[in-house]
Structure formats: structure tokens, C-alpha cells
Image 1 (cartoon, rainbow, N blue to C red):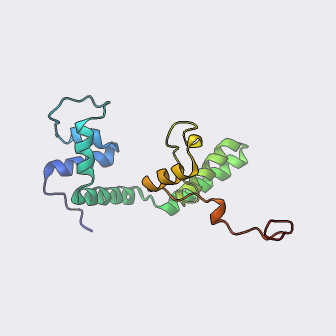
Image 2: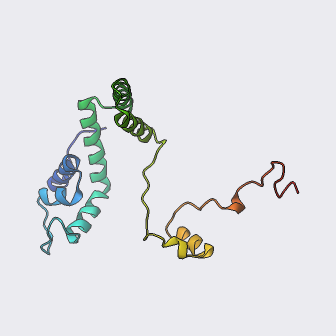
Image 3: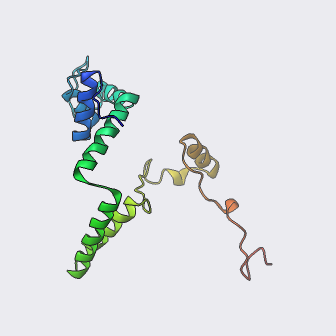
Length: 166
């Protein structure tokens, strides 16, 4: 894995600014790119589209990953070291009677190892309640969402008194 900079100096600057700032739009502007239309940094516009495209460029994407790995190596940060730190924080919190901090450390550990995933609700409140089952299935299929688990996908109950036993 080479730590060699990208040939295009603005691509290199974009990658470095992105790793430092974490915001593609700001990294794009900091790297010296300009949009043809003046757009405030707080608005969504052409700068966002250009920054997003550059972020998906294979060489830029690879360079960002290499820069992140180098930064993690310099900081000696690994998944294992983070888990150790979180466990230490959890124990200290428990010993000091700080339940909220202890819970926070446990949640962070669960997220780090993939046992807990943040989910975001899409649509307006109650929007899906107004849909028929067929409309909901079509919506899910059209948005590349996993199919919901419905009664038809579950095994038949086998406990005494269930419909399959009657």
C-alpha cells in the first residue's frame, strides 16, 4: 500500500481536507475548487454534487482510505484498542455509580462490533400506516430495503393450542 500522493494536486488536497474535516463540500472548497454558481456552504447545490462525484472517484477514494489508515496507525487506534478503552470506561463508570456513562460505553461497544446499528426512519410520521400491504411491499422493493418479516415468512406455530395443532 503506497503512501504516494495523487498526481492531481487538487485531488490530493481534497483527499487530505476530507480526512481532516469529514465534510466533502468544505474539502472541495478548501482544495481550491470553485462552482460556477456562487453557493453558500450551508446550502445544497452544485458544490455538493461536484464534491460527491469527486469523493466517488476511485483514486481519490483509495487515497482517502490510505490517509485514514495512516492516521489510525499514527494514533495506534484499532478496533481492539477502542474496545479496550470502552470497556475500561464502562468499568470506571460502574465503579463510580454512573449508570448513564456505563450504558453509553456499552452501547458504543455494541455499535463498534456491529451488534447495534443506528437506523433512520424515512417518510412522515404515520405515512406507512396509510399504505396497504401491497403498496408498502412495492415501496420497500423500490427503495432497496430488506423485505419485512410478515406472517407468511414465519414458521407455523407448533405449541399446543395453536391453529396448526387444532
